[in-house]
Image (cartoon, rainbow, N blue to C red):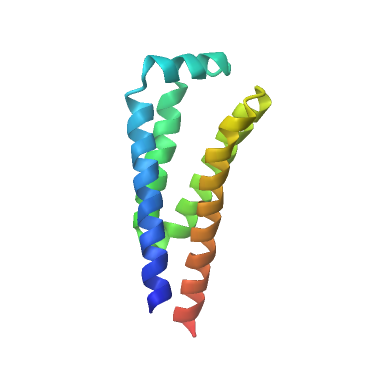
Length: 119
């Protein structure tokens, strides 16, 4: 039972992270908009990022969709890390890679939780 609680707490914290990210990408600052432009993304690309982060948030909160939410969030973080690494901003890849690891952790906990409920 404690494992289920731990998994829920981590998933909800991860959902909160993606919700903050969705908000930040919806109401993008001039600095972040300049980053997107420097990386070669279209002017409104940040809205796509915000949508994916918001979708991740909802999926992480809803237990039946949690595995898919962790996978989508991981894909978003992998894309973020790939973007900064491809532009030589190696230090900026650390945070998305850490969050990618948390997404993987939530995915593993979710699969284990589903398996233990089936037994």
